[in-house]
Image (cartoon, rainbow, N blue to C red; front, side, top):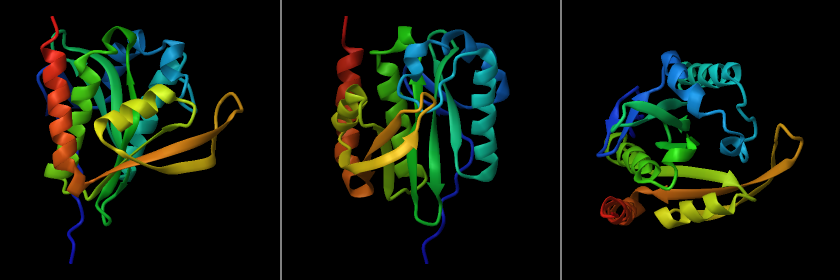
Length: 203
């Protein structure tokens, strides 16, 4: 009989990035950097005010209480500042699968190693500590940059969920699904390690 995954809050730490279990007090750090409209362009429900950021955190914590999400604050270790958020979502303990998503990183820290390292930490924990057999990722079908980034990780595109969501603007969103299987993780891990080494070697 397969044992269900035990998913509990945990701190994950890399060279430049620390993923802290999200708590309400992270609002003080996330609100000043997280209200840029560009960050939420592809998110069905945007966060535009401090109150909406508080609601965003509250929703994530309610999902954690229900056992379907495990949210994190992304912290820049060099400054100790929270500069974004990510989470495990759609957790299916019995089937040993979950999704990595709900990820945003504030503008000044984009195109750095931080997002790549965050994905590396999450995937390592999912496959090597939780024993996942499948990790899912998804994005808006119009978000070409995100689609390309997920493919660069080594995830496999599985298909498009048509008319999947109605966004806050009223636009009907099609969603592209990707996955990484446990058998594929060693290759994906090596790819991410090489990318992190390349980023850390930049002048």
